[in-house]
Length: 158
Image (cartoon, rainbow, N blue to C red; front, top):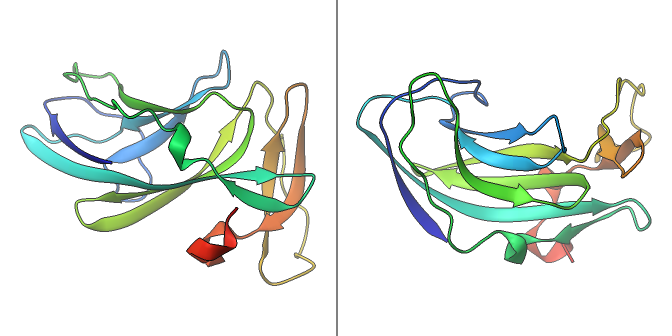
């Protein structure tokens, strides 16, 4: 899925030097891919590469890329607002999103759901390929060690 976005105005939070970011709606916990930094007349080309969901029962990442809406679009960005490019998921849980933005691969954890963890400080991981993350649930959230999705190969996902 390849998308071209022309940005007009606006400002917001960002992930490192990325123009795009993940934003969680605090009211319902749903997450969107948004334009976080803008530059007048800047054209951004991006492509969603992967969307994985962590499954707590199996401790594995499951591919959800087919759930990204095919008709993602950007609208004009008004000064001082965020512009939603695409809903990421309406599922509750922990996700890993990867996208390519102007030729560079970017990624972010997506914590989707009405409840988040207050703290994910669990100490050192029991294995080197595990990282501490919050796994949202419908009525609660839990801090656990999960397999690091950055170390997964394409064949490792379900």
